[in-house]
Structures are given as structure tokens and as C-alpha cells.
Image 1 (tube, rainbow, N blue to C red):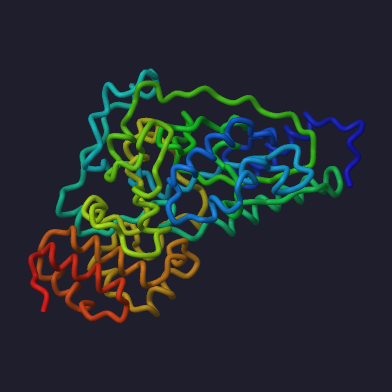
Image 2: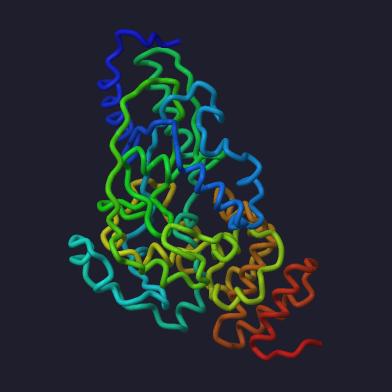
Length: 384
């Protein structure tokens, strides 16, 4: 193991940041492993039931806020940030519920960003399946884990073996809290990490290390009086600044929820079939966010423009083949059809939409049938 004496930890920290950028990360920060009062906030959020069916959030208890219990010996957490926005056009769509851009923020840089672009037409938005931008390319988990491990390997070459473990949204880790403490940005009112130079279109990954590296200073909050993300949320899931009730969040409803989507929340979902980006699309800090340099994050199979009818026609085999290597595949074919049925129920009434729904009226899945019948009812098509 590495000798802790006579080591220039500040120089090593500087090297780590250089090596991280060489590996494709946009920024690297270092946080202390003591998350302090963050544990109390997590406990209150869980006690309120805001995690919904995500039982894994509660099952790990306080370990999520105690890195040294998750990985014994952890002294610091190296946090890495990598942009995933596939194209410049991917940040320009203004959600229907997005409020006027000015004046919404006290920060002068954000005010200079100007007004948000016009919304797509209602017909266009309803016909197209809206898929969260992070999921339009290949699954990020493998790529980030590999890059983080390469960074850890480079550290090993420099100082010898040391205790560490790599994470990418794969364990009870308070990623945003750690990233904010590592100086990579501040927690926005939508609870995502925000930066002035990159907005929020990025992934986070961590290396827990048993090394006394110097920590980075946190940045200041630049949300000001802006509440664009709260006002834009289609389901009112951002119940207060810096607090999200997952049970109302479209990302939770379309990805984490295994059963029926609550009736009251189906219409607000619109045509969002996997995740939701509205709070990010409305954020002034995302107006000039950079696009990714990673080929793996490029849009695959036209998922940025595919229609609801087109995707609803996929067979189970097509779903498995076309979404191999995609984060979407984790929800399975049944929930994919469930989500698409809701989208079709919210679409404009056309012969193509009705025909698509009718083809799955007698689907083998009771979950799919339930949502198809609801969708047909929205189009005033009587049950048999």
C-alpha cells in the first residue's frame, strides 16, 4: 500500500485533475468523506416517503451519507463530471410549461442568456416520443466506470497500490452532494448539479480513496430568485426549491415505477416515454451548455425524432435488439409499451394513433392492456 509519509498530496491532486481531463472528463474535484448535515436531509426525505417504490434508497439507511461505511478506510472522494448532451439542437426545445425567461434570475450571466427558444408545435410534440437526452445514446455506466478505473490505475502507477473503489450511479452514493462539496457546481432548485459553464447536462462518477488528498472548495449558489424549473415541472414534482417528490416525477413514473401509472398523472406526462428533461430545458444555465465529445453518447436509432406510433410497433425482439447497450433497456418491454400507450393517449386523435392502440388492445400483459384502454378512452373509442 502507499506510504502516507513524505508525499506531496497537493501535487498528486493536481496530477489527478490533468489525468482526468486526458481521459475525457470535463472536470475533476475532490471532496471530504464527511457529509455532515446531508444525512439529516436524506433521512427527512425518506421519512416523508418521497422515494416512492425505490426501496433501495431506504434499505441502505445512513450508509448513503457515510462514504467510510460504504467503503471502509475512505478519506476522500474524487468526483468526475462528463457532458452527455448529444447535439446543440437538443438543448433548444422549450417545454410548453416553461415560463418566460426574463426576469427569472438574479445572476447577471444568466440574464444575458436571453429568451428561451419557441416551443415546438403541439402536433409535433405529441407525435414524437420524448426520450430523455441522457438515454438517447449508449448506456453511460460502463463507459464512466472504465474511465474512472483508468484514472485509478494511473494513480496506482504513480503512488503504488492504494485502497479505492469506483462508482457510477451504482451504489448508495450521494453523488450531487459530493460533487457540490468537490467544487464541481452547486445543487440547483431541481436538485441536479448546476455549473455556470456547463449547465446540468452531464454524468457524475466517483472514486472513493483511502488517501488524504486536499479537498476543493465548494462553489456558490447562482440560482438566485429563479424558479423556472419549479414552474416548468409538468407534474409539480419539485414541491419546493431543492426538494423533489419522486412519486410525482416523470422520470420516476416512466423508469422506476413497476406498476400502473397513477391516473391523475397520466395526462401531464404527455409524450414523455422515458424520463423528462423539462426542468433542465427551462434552466437559463443550460442555454449555452456544451455538447459531448463522446461518440457513445451520440443519438442511436433516431431516438431523438422517433414517433410514438413507430416505437409502439416494435416487437419484443426489436426492443431487445435496437436498445441493446441502452439505458432504456433496463425498464423492459412491458413498461416500454405502458409508457408509449400513455403517450398515445395524450397524442392528437388520428387514424394512425387509434390503429396503433387497437393492435395492443388484447396484449398479453394486463399492465399494457390497462394503459391501452385508458388511452383509447382518451380518444373516445368505446370498449368492446
